[in-house]
Structure formats: structure tokens, C-alpha cells
Length: 190
Image 1 (spheres, helix red, strand yellow):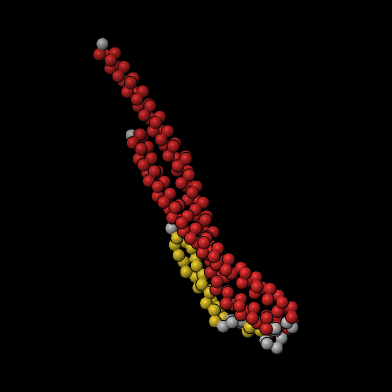
Image 2: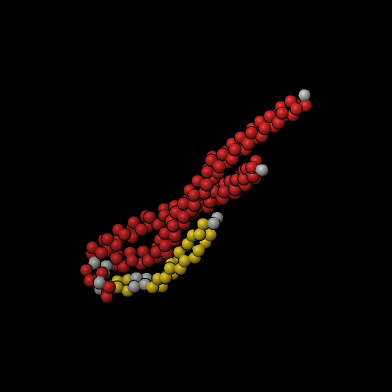
């Protein structure tokens, strides 16, 4: 009976291993797709943001200190909407920025460079929010890949070989009992 139970457990472990391996493959495919999206967006935004920040530094250095007073600034309205998605069982959140208006400074105390940099940054802000969402999604998928890989390896290298070894020991023990029973029957038959 123990042998039958062990054989069922081995079959179940092998099916579970195959399912986890398929899930791992799907997670890896999604991870590489997300990674490519992230790297493309990052590569596009980095030089633009560097230029914007340099312009901001130059513009703020040339602007009057009153330009940074909140009373002299026009603020934009922004709202972040989040949507939950499911990637192979991993719950992720994607953010989307909805923005009304552009932030600006009082033209009397701020330079044109500072105002232009604020407008350019405001235009890039939705992409930055998307980049942050992609980063969080990549982290969540990567941690799930690590966890799934551990489970696959535990099944493949620990549980299944241990069960197979136990089946082999039970078969050896049963064969030994069968031989001893035959010997007893032969001696009784004499």
C-alpha cells in the first residue's frame, strides 16, 4: 500500500513539476518583454531628462529667488489612476497619470529657460510614472520567478528523487520478502 501511495505521490509531483516549469517559462517570457519595454522607455527618457534638469539648473540660477515662492507659481492638477493586472498569477499595478494644465512660473521673476524646463518636465511626467510602474512590475515578476524556480528545483532535485529512492527501497524489500516466502514454501514442500 505504501508503494502505491508513493507512486501516486511521484506522479503528482511530476505533474506539479511540469505545471510549475510551464509557469516559470511564461513568467520568463513576460519578464523579458517587460524588461525590453522598460529599457526602451528608460533609454528614451534619460537623455531628455538630463537635458531638462540641466536647463532647470541654469534657469533656476538665472531666475530671481522669488520665482520659487509658491505664490508666484501656477500649479497643474494631476491624478494618478491605477489598474491592476494579472501576469501569470502575479498581481501587478500599472499607473497612469492624468494631468490638467502645465506648471508655470511668474514671467516677471523666472527666466524662459526655467519655464520651458517646467513645461518639458510636465510633458515627460506621465512617461516617468509609467516607467515607475514598469519597474515595480519587473520587481514583482522577478521575485515570483525566483520563488517558482526554487519550487521547481525542490521538486526536481529533492522530492522526486527521494520518492523514487523510497520506491526502490520498498521494491527491494518486497522482492526480499517474496524470495524468503519462496524459500519457506520450497522447504515446506520437501
